[in-house]
Image (cartoon, rainbow, N blue to C red; front, side):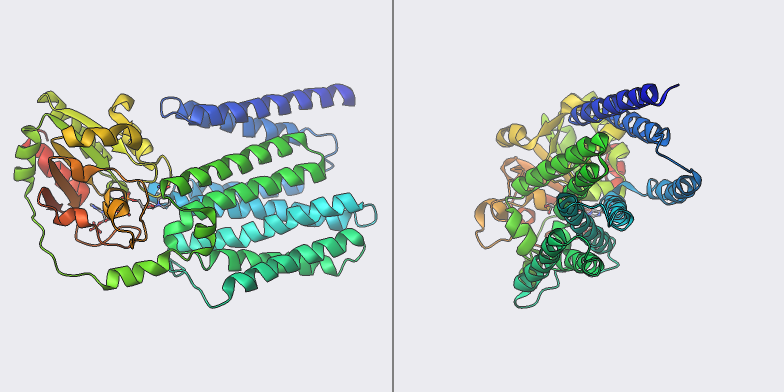
Length: 461
Ligand code: NAP
């Protein structure tokens, strides 16, 4: 085959890969088609990698094979982590992606010092700065989520000014390099300053905001890959990076909206700090609790039940028991639906994925905006391991750190039952006034065990 014909085949493979990436994002937007979305993305990525391996410019395969073995050795165990550890796993993936983008940019600079034009120097510098800061920022984010680093925001006076000065320093060095690309001594300093900025960027942000930060870092990693595509003249990288960058950015916006937070508040607000003081002024108040038998009797007597799943259901892996509960109640003629809050759990879509895994029909899953109007006509709101997303303080208490966050209006249901292990707060670290309402019953216990006990009471196994 001539080189021209081969190039045409490769270009065709890249176009198909890009189409598959776009299709993948489209399919991922609905739980019904999400599995196909994953498959389309996987095939697209495999096609892009295989086509690249046939690139006539490749001179030897030794290092590629070594890298593939190392990458697979790290990637396969990473892919097996529990669902609840996916945010930190994702942060690590972004760290690796950003690191490779930065390393390729660095090698482009050193390999091509003589020929690098000013424009290319600008591209390389920007790409290496974004890649480097995303690398260290993602590592800090993963460390915070895994709790190997303190979750609380680490802040000091004048922090934002110091951090922004460091960023300005990195950009200043980039400008100096654009003016004189041959000034090789500046390049490693610029990389080092960008790496430091990544640490400074994420350290002051509390654990509660990490999922949003990760999504934002995802977006940075994508844009750095897109810039790398320009540097390497690879169209597939430009498109894939742009898709990654923009989808990460859109997701961050959705998450910020769902928490009623602005970007600046997430990035510079040190959200987790408020938690400690709020937790400190807790007063003793009385709650009513109930047994599985009592809970089963109330559920069996209801006409309409709305189940609100949250992070605790994920931790307890209670979704299959919840499915059994759904089956038992449906058999008794109870109308059971599931209320999905956009940031329930620890990542967007967390609850959809778990409930789909347990084969709960999609049409029973109702988004927050759609179901909120139905709570006044709901007999029982059964909350399973959710907390912040049901906290009425978000509507009523202006001093609450989550004031303004849209919540599920469960307090408007006739009876509220809450399965959790203790009176401990949720992710935002704040008390929930819902638990002290007259119509609320606390069902203390592990979600899987408690739901299992209710199922038994209702005649299941
Ligand atoms: P949450 O507020 O973190 O509450 C989870 C509750 O589950 C806790 O109160 C805990 O109480 C309970 N729990 C833990 N393990 C349990 C078990 N084994 N059995 C029963 N209960 C258990 O969760 P959420 O209501 O789902 O809210 C999500 C939070 O994450 C929000 O603050 C949201 O802003 C934040 N967030 C989410 C995303 C996202 O994309 N989903 C992104 C950014 C931030 P006990 O310890 O008493 O059991």
